Image (cartoon, rainbow over all chains, first blue to last red):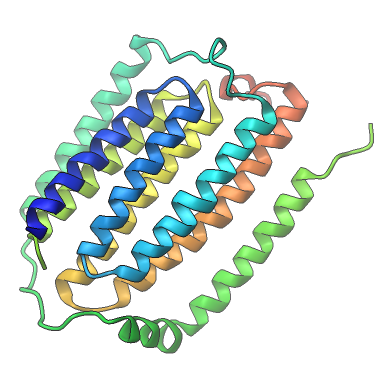
Length: 162
Length: 102
């Protein structure tokens, strides 16, 4: 049951992403991407990471995508008559490069031999203990980084005097 | 683990390649280029979560959370840059911004 769900969701994710990157209209692309992120969140839930699944929906599908939408609306980039897809010639070389990378990493991943999985579920409690006890310094650094990003965004976004 | 790790890795690799192709193809729109980067980072998160489930350790999930925080910082800065560039040149075409000096 869960296995079937995983494969269905994997197909939904891949199709949503393909539609998103081939869509010429940025707003539609973002809506497709939100669909893809929702199914990816359910995949995270199936992989015993409920907290990450919730954050995926709240932060990615919620905050980040709304930020994209906000910028598109603010700069007025969402006009359907002005949207244009790159020419077919421009798709060829990136597809070849992407295909080469897909096949090479795929071969590496297929040949890997992992240690069989250890027993035991990852509970939220275990996750929190690892997060705040083992990686406490990383939390501090990441919060500093978010602060710097806010300061940088404020600096770039302010209106200059002509 | 409900599915073998290889299948999770395959899904992540396909998503990563799609994001890479999106980044390489969409030079006419910075927003789509950033979307490609988002897709690639999501594939990396999927690898972390899948490995965390496979080995039964919570460290992978912690790093997925780190990637998420990093992405939100990156997106806020990058979109501020897009707004700044659009104000200067009134376009989001990457090819228009090939001069270092003004």
